[in-house]
Length: 199
Image 1 (cartoon, rainbow, N blue to C red):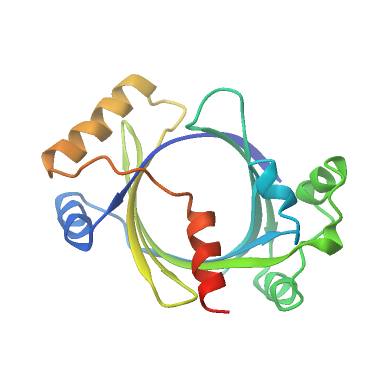
Image 2: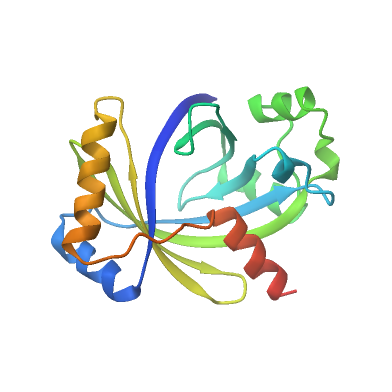
C-alpha cells in the first residue's frame, strides 16, 4: 500500500493541441491502462468527493482511492493497493473491490459496505509522460465505453517541484500553443457519463 499527496494542474485539449505538445517534448513510450470506476447505487463515494477504481496495465494492476483534502482544489490523497492482473480481472468480472488492503479498511472506516460497490464507469487511456524540473508532464488520450474520445494535459508536481514555478510553467505551456483554459470535468465523471450512455 502507498499513500501520497497529489498536486496537479489539468486542461482539456483538442486532438490538434495534443499532437502539438506531444511533438514538442521528449515523451517516454506510452503506457496503456484500463480504469474501472466503482461506487454504490446511492453514490456514497461521489457524495464524499472520493474516486475509487481498479486500474489495469499490461503486466500489473492496482486499486486506488483518491480523497480530497482541505488544502485546495489541486490537492488529493491517493491510496494504492497493488494487485496481480489475474486478481484484478477476477474482481472486475465480479464487480468487486479487494477487501484485504488499505482501501478495504478505509471503506470500513467510512461505513460503506464493500459488497454494495458496482462498476459505474470505464476508461482506457494511452498516457505519455515527460519528467521535468516542474513536475511530471502527462498527455492522456482516453476512450470510453461508448467509443467517445478526449484529450488532456496534466502537470503532476513532484516533491522537488516548487508549486509557483510549476503553475507558471503550465500556464506558459497553454499560452505558447494558444490553448484556452478549459474547466476540466473529472475523468471519473466523464467515464461515468459515457458508461451510462452506452447502457
